[in-house]
Length: 164
Image (tube, rainbow, N blue to C red; front, side, top):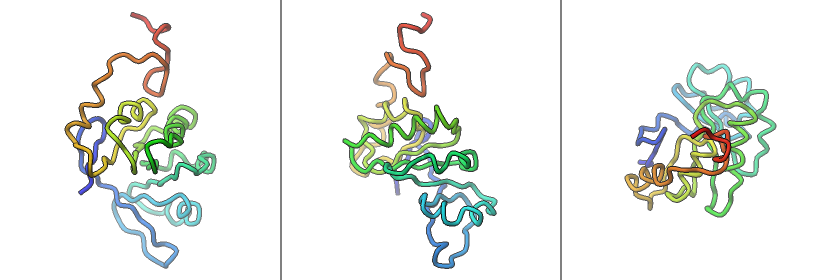
């Protein structure tokens, strides 16, 4: 079972990854998310569903292809392939700040406790925690810093422009 945090609390993941339309598969019921390539190939078919719809984005994908459809998604999954690769941080900020995405943004892959606070600042509100990470220790990461200096998705102004 995947360790899952949503909105700073342990939660149950009710989303199912789905691929299979290219093989003539039928659409399952419930909440599903598909890789970006499948969304682009089967957009019209996927839009006929009644359940929640999400898309999984690689950190090398260009978000511009989702611009017109961003509000059709309930979930966007961002891949963090390794700790030292920060491109998905940028994708999260673009989704929130430039595209106005208000749904769930989930981090998956090499998600570490030390990054959770910063991921949240970029607009990510759900996290699949690696198996080797402790869930209760990970939850504490959100409260370890109480003052932020720079603006981000969670704070519009730098500290020097905030009212006391």
